[in-house]
Length: 66
Image (cartoon, rainbow, N blue to C red; front, side, top):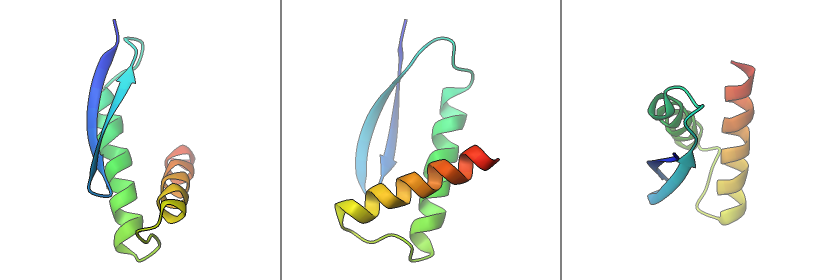
């Protein structure tokens, strides 16, 4: 059974599906949101779609390093 996780990124709500084999989905989602917010508050992201995508990509790469 899939679980639905709701997160807010860039002022928009997103619903993501997660399988049962994923551990603490909310912790992972919170970590992603925190990293995106950290990057965005540093001025690395702007309000364009390309910059949003870039911010998400950098956040994901930063998370994968940890």
